[in-house]
Every structure is written in structure tokens, then in C-alpha cells.
Length: 434
Image (cartoon, rainbow, N blue to C red; front, side, top):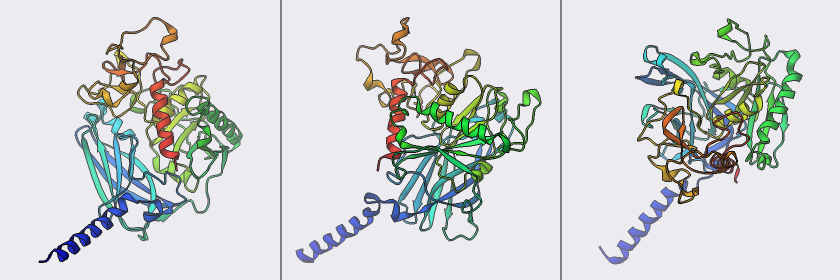
């Protein structure tokens, strides 16, 4: 075999390898997706020992309102991930999330009872056949359950929704550039048809609440906020502790997991049906009630009482969960939960177990700051001094936060701490940069 022939073979192999690598290195949205949305509905079921995932339904909706760049990247790990691969095995889209189901399996009820939960996720509509993998991780960041299925875009059983008969809506905050913004939908819950003017006013105030906090305030031109007028037959929400049950658009209720203030809805498919055809990526549900409570689930939804006196700080706190994936920084001795473990570094950016502290806010601390950091008696330093303060993630010991006070710790702190603000800002850039 002569030298020229060997060089020709090497050149051919190099060209083939370059062609194979091209789709990933030069990936663009238009290579793989249309400007529509594929909604994937699943049932997550099981108990604390075993969890299972089943495909429920597929739907096509008009428009895609998520990111169009960095499609195969995850800004945050979440407790679960969705991975889309093309027929050659290339990862073309990824998404992370938390679910009410994964939280439920950490509670005592899950030790003796099996339950099922609805879950829905949005991806850009693929041009060709893809494989979708759903991965659920446990509180130790280990895979608890995984499920892969194929999606064929031409499947006649993919229902089309949102092309007609959309829920009425009104934009309450406009972005600077609709092509590079974050779409947030505010959904009415417990508002009757006669109360829709009240809802729109509540939605406008809610948008103002969120955008009054940094870094949302200085980056508000990157958000489009839409009020969605979903009508309920009865006003208010269900309060099981008082034996009050209401017929509302989303069948929301307090006492989730038998916690009086925990307000949620389990009707996830109904929620996304209401939103079909409306520009949305993130969801906030406004509940027509004066009862204290709410909840925020990362990349799932945020739900808040619209008329309690603490609505502003609570709404912003829960948005920190649902949008930014921030962890709670409080801890009560009487209510400690085993959601974080020694030897396992949480994926949330605002808490640490010191297992991998280099990945958190260590580089922003003064080098002489002791770890752990003793509390300060000076009120003026509690909002800005960055250290390692024990007590966070529902644990009084072994889990740490970066400042003594923060919007993710209590309702009276006026701001997010520097660590949370930095995390939120990075996420906004991830979603909106061209």
C-alpha cells in the first residue's frame, strides 16, 4: 500500500469524522425543530421505595416560546431531567425540573401508600423521529427511575390544541424583544367570570411585585408576562382543614401533604390545556383567596394566594423556587425534612453541605472568613456579608446558606442575597441571550 493511498484514506476518514461531529458543534434550532411546541404528558407513580414513569398523551401546540440556543445544556440539574436525542443518538434538547411527586416520596405517607401524579413538559416540536428520556433522581442525586420512548412527529394520535378556542388573555408586561425573552403566564384560579377584572388587576400587581426585586427589576425588559383568564364556577379555593371544597378551574387546595399552608394543584394536564396556544414557558397560578399559603416547584409552576397581606414577599419567594430553582434557606427544629444529606452536595446554588463547596459561592467570600461563619449581631451586615451560615434546606445542622438573611429565608428580608441574585441573573441570561 503506497504512501499516497494511505494519505487519501486518512483524509477521507477525517472528512467523515468531521461530518459526523458537525450536527453537534454547529447545532441550530432550525436543524431539528419547527416553530411549534410538543407537550409530553406523563404519569409518575409509586412510593418511597419504587417510582415508575408512564407516557400518557402527546399534544402539539402552536408556537415555541422556550430558548432557541444552548439547546443541549442544562443551567440547573433539578431533581429530574428530560433528554431528547435524534435517531443518531445526538442530544438535541435538555430540560430539568422538580415535581410534586418527587417531593411527596420524601414524606411519611409514601412509606405506606402508592400514589400517581400528572406531569407535563414542553419541548420544541421535532422535525424527525426522536427518543425522549425522563430521569427522576432521589434526594441523594441518584437515579430513582428512568423511562425512554420514541416520538414520531407524524403520529396521527398527537392531538392539536390551542389553534382555536384559546383561553382569553391579556399582556400585563411587555419585553424589549419578544424573540429573546422569558414568557411567564399568570393563571386565574378561583375567579368567577364576574371577578375577571379583579384577576387582571391582581395579575398586574403580581407582575409589579416580581419586577420590583433585583435582579428582576434591572432585567425586566427580558420578561413577557401574560394574564390568563381561566374562569372558575366558584370563587376561592378548597380548604380541607375547614371542610371547604370549591369547584374551581384547577381544583387547587390547601393541606397538601397534610401541611395546612401548602397550596397546590394536582391537575397539571388541565393547567396546560388552559394555556394551550398562549405564549408561555413558566407558570404562576394566582388564587383568589385571603388564606396564607402557596408553593413553588422548579420548572413546573408557582401558586400563590392573591389577597393575603404577605402576598408580595411570599409571591417573590415562591418565584425564586419555581423560576430560579433556589432552595429554602430556613430550618425549623420541629419540622426537619430529610431532603438534603451529608456527603451529597445539593444542586441548588444557594445552599451547600460543604461536600463540594468550590462549586458554590466560595470564590466570592473573603479569604479570612471562617467556615462555618459565626452569626453577626450587627443588623446592617446581615444582608451583605457572605459566609457559610448553618441552618438551611429544612435542616438546622449540616446544611449552610451564604448570608444570615435572604428573601429565601424569611418574609421580612427586603432582598434576595447576593448569591441568589447572582444565580437568578445567570439563569435569565441563559434563557434570553441570542
